[in-house]
Image (cartoon, rainbow, N blue to C red; front, side, top):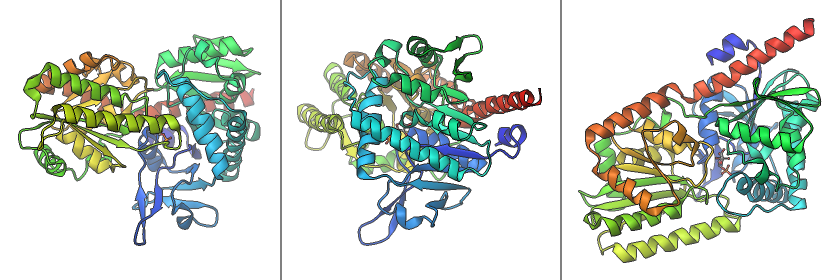
Length: 491
Ligand code: F6P
């Protein structure tokens, strides 16, 4: 907010993302409820736009969304203290199937994540992807009150949009953030429309990734597939005379997180979770919380729980792993298959080790509110983030932020971007169940002083490298660019 006020006086901010920050749904028996989606993107961007104001353009996806907007499809949010406008875009079922489920989530998602799920590229999905990107680009132009707004474009759903906006609003400062990994050039070469995607992204003024590694993969991809000039020192790529700065901006969470407000003390959270899940008094707790996505390593961590109980029978009857998983992208076969596999595996492990009054794995498949998620984090002896591949992973940072008692252990995949920052977590290879089981045992037996020392370090890092710094750094870079461009117009 300070960066925007001082460095970008009078600048207009527009956010573009697929997922909306508030979803309105009809509830049984009448009435409407508001849901905050399980989304790393939303957790990161929402506090920023809440602080600086502006317009957020996103796909209206809730059953009651249309009932809550005005004639221009806008609604003031957050619902309890409005500070910015949410502009909803409506998509037909065919557009949603082609652009979101098809090209974005059966094409780009498996292409960019190494999870050994084969990407599917269909001509018709690509057509809808282009069409929806055009629709959102038109919406940016319609919503913009100035000719040089700052447009914050989010994620792989909108790879073509930066170029489309650049054509319509040449003076806009377009800052695009890619929330998922960027693969190496050879892998990206699988995509039949690689040149168009690179060209689309290079319409941005600034293109951000989580890590330097992903920036380098992007440079390598640009170099391989399009005629451009890459300046590694300036960290930029120039295509058709337009330069795009390509920089790492490790994403984070708000500090302190709003979900922490109103939380009970840690022992009371433990008691509440024990009673909700029917766990005995002395039973120790591990948690995993995320969308039910095949990149998250959910099945792999269940195998690790199985291995833990085999290798350390002392935990039989004394430890339960609670997996909270929000259903996601369920129209896609690989997501349904994962869910079926996880349910069957949990049943199998529970049948193998469990007793009539104790289950080693509790699977809670539904949406969990941020307050519930934080209560689980606070009740846990350890939290597992076992992503097979992940840009950053904000669950790891939220767990750390939830533990103001400085206790609890983070078991963290080496393949999540977060492992580059949260080095005091127990870093594991999620493909190796015995490695993860070993880390779980270490977490359950870790002396309090060591837990506190590790947690303090991680909390200090997330406190300072919070989401305001993430957004602030991008906005400062945008401000510098705008000043440079203003000087060039004087020359
Ligand atoms: O983690 C990548 C990401 O695209 C987030 O940026 C996004 O919020 C999340 O996946 C959720 O996906 P979806 O919006 O498809 O539910």
